[in-house]
Each structure stands twice: as C-alpha cells, then as structure tokens.
Image (tube, rainbow, N blue to C red; front, side, top):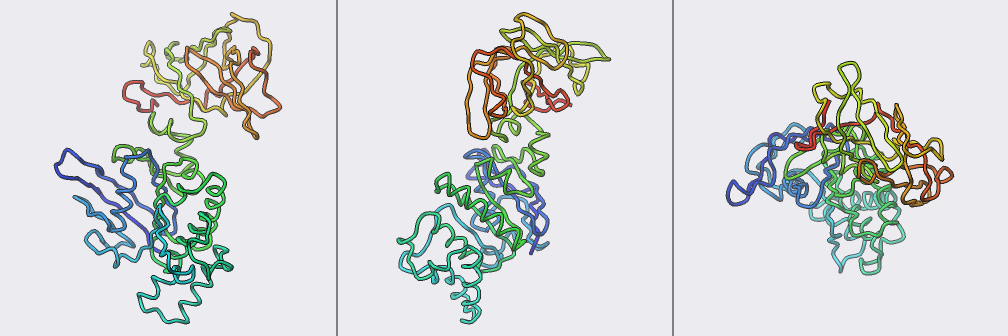
Length: 371
C-alpha cells in the first residue's frame, strides 16, 4: 500500500489563459478510497491522468508513498488503471486478458496462474475464463477489466468512470463489488466519477471539483452535512438541497428569517446567522429529509412563530421507499422527503417543519457559506 499526495498541481494547455488544474493540494492516506467528483469539464479526468503519468503537469508535484513521481514514466509508477472503456483485447480469452500485464513482465507461470485464480474468485468470473470479450455482457467485461488491474497488486489503483457505460442495475451491483474489493485489498484507490451517489457510497474521502479547483475535501458525511459553498451543497445530494431566498430580521439576541407560502407566513429562528446580516437577503439551504410533516388542514393566512411553515402540497412523487412532496416558499419550489404512508394528497394544506439547527445559509452573490 502507498499514500498519495498532490502538492500545488497545475496543468496549462497552450497559453496560461487555458488552465485546467489550478493548484490542487490533496493528501490521501494509505489504504483510503479517494473520490474525485464533479461535472463534465471540471478537470477530474485530467488530474487522474496526471497521477497516472499519462499527462504531464505544468507545476507542482505528485508523490506516491512519499516518492516524487512527477517526472517518472507511467510504467515505473507501480499503478494500475481501469478505464471508462473496457479496453479488452478481443482476440484473447478472459484468462489471457487478466494475465497480460503479468506475462509482459515475465512473471513466472505458477505465479500468473495463482493471480488469475485469485482475481477470478474475487470478482466471481471463474466460469468465464475461457470466453472471449464478445461473449460477455457489459458487466462481465467490466469485471475482466478490473481483474486485469487487480492481478498486478500495484501500490495504487486508478478508476476513471468505470461504471458509466453500464445500465442502472449493473451500476449498483458493480458499485457494491468495487467497495467489497477495496475492503478486502485495502489498496489506496482514486476513483473519478460525475455521479454524486457513487461518490457518497464508495469514498472514504471526497474531493468535489469545479473549474479545475477542489471546492471541498473531506469525508462524505462532512461534505453532505456541512457544504462549504453553494456549488457543493447543490451538487451533493439527491434530491438536491432546497435553496430559498430569505430576508434576515430580528436583533442581536434572536436572528430570524421569514418564509411565505400561499397558506401563510412563518418566522424561523436562524441561530447560526451573524446579527450583522440583519436587513440582507441570504439563501436558506435545507435538505428534503430535514423537513418534517406535521398537522393537516391548517387555516390559511395564519402566521406561525417557530419552524412550522403553513404549506399546500402541489405535487406528490412516489419513488418507492420515499415520497417526494413539492410546494412553494417565497416563490421557490421546495422538496420534502417523507415516508410513503405519511404522504398527503396533492392540494392538501399542512405544516412543514424545518430543523433550524441543520439549516445552512449562503451568500447569494459569492455562493460562500455564511457562518
């Protein structure tokens, strides 16, 4: 196993005006599973290729197990990479594909046979060893591509969106397989994805990227509960966090915000907001599961003092394990997640209660989190 450290990594194409990596600093401990997540074009695959040595960097350094490998050839970095495309050799059997990297390194035959058997058992592909790629399903081909990397026992595994070509059911199955594999092997892994569900379920640590910069680096739980800015809060979570513009009111002893709907008005305590913000408009962020459903049939026009907002349900979306309710606060559509047996019908008036302690606030101009 080996740790990974990136120090001020920059990548510029052509002129300095086209900078795709803008000073990336990350440190991954031995055996950790790092997720690089972000929208298309954010630089995550470029960063992955730089770690692999497939892309040179303009500035900074890359260290694997404390060794500076910035100028080391890819073949000498002792890494294994699984690509988005399976990249299997069509004329070779599964056994030959898995053992190819070992054979070109002139590994003894006995050791090759042991590694192929180990990897095939790990990925549950023993019955497929004599087949060729054309005889395999997409999920089976991806397992073989993973097996070719696993047979090497490298210091570092790199996965570049390996599940993006699979259908939804297979993605869930392979996601579990990858997590189980990491738990067994404990090898440091870097995984690139644009899917925030993969990021939350797989990673020990997550780096959320945008425009060549790391917006936030931390555990999945920390990033979900305490997003640093508006981008992170909106990108992580499904359904996404609700963002409602609110005016800050109150005094030094009690800061509050007001929420309006067609059914009435509520004054919500905002204990985390600085009294210096009184009179300004900020964005209230609250996740769908942090809104609870209370009493039904509340009288329209009533003002509530507390966390309860009189609300009329506009749309009901059953998803199976949950039901999503949609309404409007301050002219903005908001979502509430409830258990299916708690869901009212569309058009029902009710009280939606938010957990004011878990609400977060953002500057609408800069997008930065407000303490």
